[in-house]
Length: 201
Image (cartoon, rainbow, N blue to C red; front, side, top):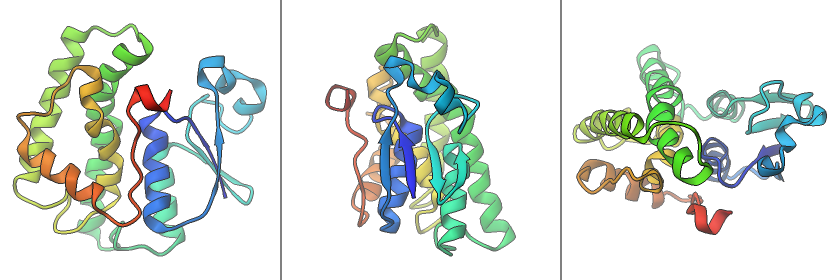
């Protein structure tokens, strides 16, 4: 199993984190996004979108972090991380959609501004980031993890960009439930850190 990754990518960290939580061995291939490696023909041949992460499981090639999380949970029969019952699966999907939507357009974009000089407007992005963080914090004030008493791939999908939100000038000080949740995830056996940008670069 190979994972095409980039150390500064929260999307790639989602997959690295889940593989480690599952105890799955894999080969990590770092894609030099700064040098444009993700836009070269050889990489576009495995992901036409030119994005990381990409999983290659013995010739089955799958882009998209959230899709990879679902694939891994199904491949290894981990219904503890992705419930089989309709209600449980739907609750997980709800937060996977948030990770691909409001989280990506809030905390993740704010971080892109500060780290990669992305052409977004901080005065628009930062309020969006706090709006979704308030909703996440509200959910976590009622449940230990996003979908109940135990972690699922929904928590994995949300963790990385929430944890590094301060790198985008989105402070977490007021979100006490999020702070507790981050600590709970970081205490899970197999947890791997999403390194701060200054250490990962």
